[in-house]
Image (cartoon, rainbow, N blue to C red; front, side, top):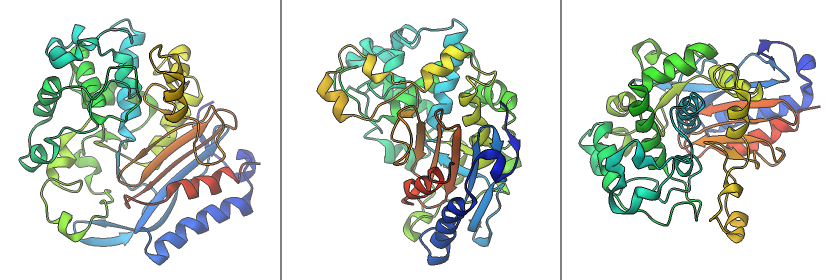
Length: 359
């Protein structure tokens, strides 16, 4: 069912328990644990009005946080890039079992010819999380194309499909794959195929001018604020990293989560949407049982299970290094998008409090 604004009672949420979650977030802002943030919460298709706490900083000025504030969501971008690839797969443009080099021939260098698309989606490709040259590339404001070229030439850390190792560079290649097959820049493809159909009008890959005035800048140490290539720099804001460059509001991410709870929400069919949030790592034939037991379970772009302490085995979620987390649970119909500007905020504690409010 589509989201609509409703009451706590309609959503099946306990007012007293939910107030504890709100008080926890307010307390973080009051004691300086975080500068501020926002949260959108829904259950069973009933969305509570987004809740804001603390303050936001933009261009040196500090003002009260707005529930419609725009955040750099960092790695919460990854499931959206994954969805873009699945849209193409569902239309017959590629198979998840395709070797990546079938579509990007230059990717085959240094043993990467056996990497499959599904390895990129499940963090089992063997690619590094970040390039060894990551800092140097950003310091000189290298374009995304240069990152892709470096990834195509880098080696693997292990044989694809045999280990789980979180890798942003796999998502970078996934985004490039979408561009190759669609013939469109990834920000345009996402806007036309995902954001517009879902009503996510406050979301973009790379910051667009229409959203810039509502931005909540990431809280960084003073020494990092002075650098011209960090999260708050114009370079990074315009970079559009497929692995971490999306800007959005908590309300828009609630729409995204609800679409998956609705079996695709119109942008993806039921089968593909179900595959996104189901355990895929256990199906990889070369992933040894002992490795599965030690590793986080991945769907296609989503962490599966272990959402907070009380999410079911079917729950799915993703976090971002800028202090963001989104998650949902098909068992309870609960979803939550929680964004702060504090990179090390203990968001799982707030998620626990939210999960405890479900009646």
